[in-house]
Amino acid sequence: MSSLFELRGQLSKRRQIEIGLIGLVIIILVWWLAVVLKIFNPKIIPTPFAIIGCLPELIQRDQMFYHLSLTIFMNCVSWIEGAAIALPLGFIIGLYPLFNALFGGYIQATRYIPLTATIVLFMAAFGIYMFMKVQFLTFAILVYLITAVISRIHEIPQVYVNAVKTLGANRWQTIKTVFIPQVISRVSTDFINIVAISWTYAIYVELINKQEGGIGALIYNLYFRQNETEKLYALILIMVAVGFLFDQLLRLIDRKAFPFKYY
Image (cartoon, one colour):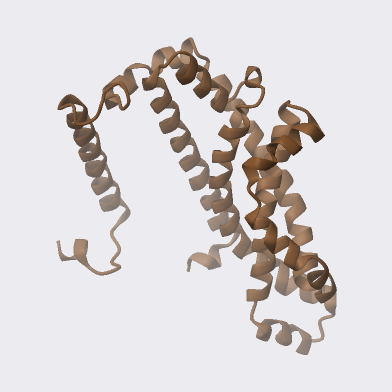
């Protein structure tokens, strides 16, 4: 019992699952009681059981899986494109003082761009279809990921670089044996966190040309047109679940690719 209250203590995986399930039951019961006792307005916050009850209609009539697949596809393409652009650019700017002086400060400043305000520019440049949405999400990833790569390069201890130079490594060998593995292993954690942010922007950008589909478009149609609150909450919870599954998948890949981070 004392291990449950130990400062920064660790529990077994089984114990964590058991306690987590108890926590879930408590949350559902408190939520349900708050609605039943009129603490929450059921027209604004429905009961958990009402949300579960709307799932069959959401799946069959509203084609939830079709819209969800569009959102997942759009996100995955933007993640790949964003990583393919951010990694080489980040390495070039982070490794070479010339490029860092030329562009480093401006790249750092892009983190403060109000991304949602730039959607009009993307519409003007790429139209209103899926390609534009992917480019917008890619830009949202680049803003954070390039900066993360540069920061991670600067974190690498100089002693690693000095060690390989002592062994006779040239510039490319130093990059290949020190910077690439060290930076990629660290940036992978940043990438997982950035992926979580991209779900938010995906829902926003899908409000453009809603006829094309996606979870964002489905949320708009169900709530703002039909005022089906239960389905709105169901979609939000489903997006949380899908995001969590992707997070766990990426962390599993991270553990397999960089096991030394978890020793």
